[in-house]
Image 1 (cartoon, one colour):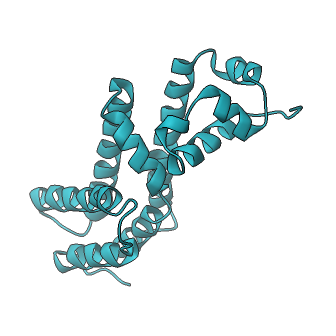
Image 2 (tube, one colour; image 1 turned 30 degrees about the horizontal axis):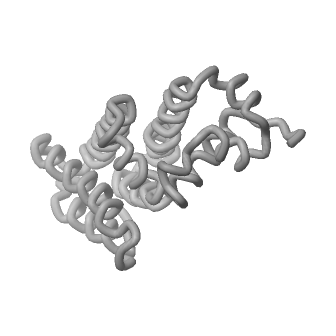
Length: 188
């Protein structure tokens, strides 16, 4: 085990463990085994289990809310309809199996629940920001943002380990719904 690991290496391994065997597998020894380092490396980076969990949750929020929002805000994507399509594509890249495990974890850990709430709030705000240029009514924008978030969360919860349902088909329908309410014609 003479490998060097970065915090991101640990975060990636943690998300794989959450997506696979789930929360019971997320332990220091198993995590270090996945990364190929000793527990000394873990403690060097995070100091404690709580330090790791806080850093993992911050990383997850940045990757799953901040990065996608930054991408849809790019200056070269000016058309509101294109921004909706881009956000829809980004929703397909979410580590849904890991997030399902994080949602379960949030039911037993207040720090995880707070992080989950931050991610949900950030995603809701991102959807609002993306669809607001298309729809003049702020109340309708808020409702549609809630529908979009509910679709994503519901898909994660209903279809984890159950019958496969193509999320892209669901997101296509959400995009059609948003476009049907658009006050501003959008290309695409």
